Length: 319
Ligand SMILES: [Zn+2]
Image (cartoon, rainbow, N blue to C red):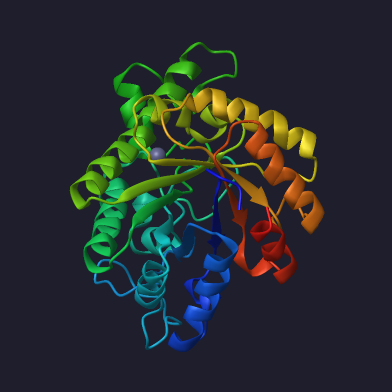
């Protein structure tokens, strides 16, 4: 194993790590033996159901009788690995079904986004994170969909900007007010991350974030200024999603990520073993891991666990 380089994996289902309590140790051992440090299971996907026991959100009707999140966390702990509970934060179909006034209004149409800038949305998501942190022996919380999904023009956003003299219903591309609106949206998302920082500090656990690979483009399109989160030391681990079949592209982004974070926290590059943007052979995946290391990242996060073959894990183990 290479020194000072870390491995993690995302998985969209906590049950990707075993269909029964007995199977979980097998998956955890498989990852621990390959040298992985961190497992990031999604426990609130875009439909908004909770894949854990809670009274804050509706529990996924498919969540099994046994408690996969608890079993996984305890199993990982025994092997010296960590588990961060992943939420797709602001894409939450269940929330907006229950409270339609909290839906984001985007030009792209209804994708199940709640308005990330709305205080009630932020309060709900924070309460759900607090609940999982208080009821499970987690090592950390993980932010994803920590963005607006577009430029929201809901009535609350319109009213907030109108109070500052900006009519976002009629704003044009080169209008200087557009920058003020973008800054405001970014500040609202950052305010949520600040609350998550306070929560994780209170609980003595870590905070990690999956962020877009291209900053500042993601400020404009998605109100995500993770450069500022690094400057303010709001997260313990920055995980930029760098899903690309081109290792050259991936290299250039890693260089930018490491410079932007500027040693405020570790950068672990998110690599798309199998993603909507990429499909990597074992050889290319390993090339990208070496590239991430050579560009100054201190780890790699593989998307996603079900795509990791024995060949992949053996290659990682033999680094
Ligand atoms: Zn809004």
